[in-house]
Image 1 (spheres, protein in one colour):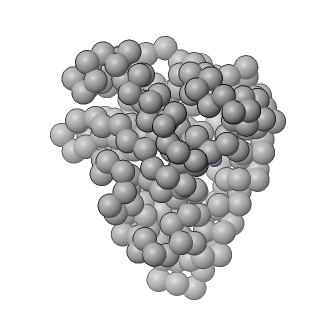
Image 2: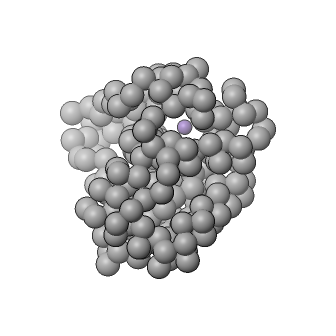
Length: 202
Ligand code: MN
């Protein structure tokens, strides 16, 4: 069964002014759609056909560039759309807030460390907040469409928040000003969703 491009849980213009509608539309209908189509082509007729995306990525042969790049791209963007919301922003509460304080000292400490991971990823890639079994949080970044589910990549936990720092994610509106895009991302983070994933994956 082929993977399908998910619908966005909000309109393309819903995250304005933080992320513009044109960027969202191209990102979803061209980039994410492209990863999805190419992933399906790469697994068709192989023993990966019919497996779930987490199963495929966690057991991935990292020399399989087509599945690595496009399977990563498919999964990463699925998460990215879900962890943003027009009602997002602010700070988390409950056990996720406590876990952030434990790992990073404070929410401000988390913001600073996550922003640095996103800003210093050279070229294209992602910044991640990951949870380890037992609930400990860790921040890391990965190049290209790699993610922490893949063997030997990133910080080994399960990603519950991801920020796309490919230029296609921000260049139309922010041009070279990646730090402004990173800062704007904090206004749309869907902490309810991140908290749900934390509880489910800890
Ligand atoms: Mn992207």
